[in-house]
Image (cartoon, rainbow, N blue to C red):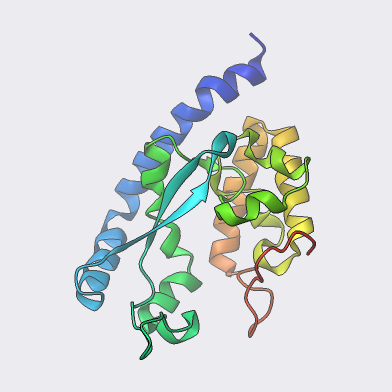
Length: 206
């Protein structure tokens, strides 16, 4: 069996498990502190679950820290995100700490440490045939698109980066992405398209 195939089939999964356990041990004080604050702030609700599309276009629930309240208007509809996000929630988002619970998804085998970010089910019908190939690998906590612009680039560029990863996946590329992610988080680069406008929803063309 070719070395690359061995990596994709076995070694990458072992690295995901070992890496996730190591990260959990290192960040456990931070994880517990955030969980405690959110437990108090959100009346017992620490995590937020959302359906996403994963490997081979299978549906799964991604786990994040709950950074917004459940406040509703007089008609019972949730208020806009900008009105529901808490100051503490905004802080952990700015530091990308809201993504930490996705390590649980990695341990469950639904995600990998590195891969295209899992997106919403509503986007599936909008993909081109080539863009569907982003689901030929497991989605990741970080990926080639995240270290090459993240939300500061267009959806078209983001998908091209995802497809580059699918076509060039290797141990060296994964290690490079993990290192670049660490640097990006420290420098807080590429979080939003601008200071006032977050990443817009994908409409099949942008």
